[in-house]
Length: 218
Image (tube, one colour):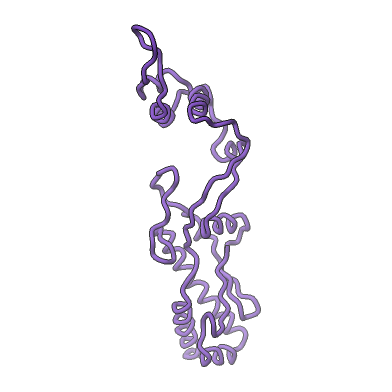
């Protein structure tokens, strides 16, 4: 994902400013667009820090409910590139980082596989005790245990589940209760969190300011 800015009448500069820009030596035009790129990078980094979109709204929340910050490292690898003295691209150095950024910028879905999940989180210890989150999920799904006295079953408490099941057994039972089949791959929905971009008016104003500064310096 990259932010592309081409100074023209439709996007950034007025006719007068375009003439001033064209009159600049190529080296100065490159310097102007690089300066603009650093300005836009600063804005993007600020949005990532405050977890807000280009429109000023809060980022869409995590699907797992966690409150930790998202896309924290995305601003570190943003770099401005100028092509031919006429085009600015603010993009990530690494292609993989750019693809991840684009997914969060625009929203969509990401394919996850069992092997990739293991690489990210490590292979689970299925013999380890059941986690509290697993126990809570099982209790919410109505997991039952046999009654100590009499016949039949009753709903188990979170404490009982955590104390009687291991990680592997809890995973299997939870999948059965939810009617989930074993999957080798699945799609994870990703909400849009646009942090890279700017309005035409703001780009035009900033370019005009930088152009004035360059003209003063001579």
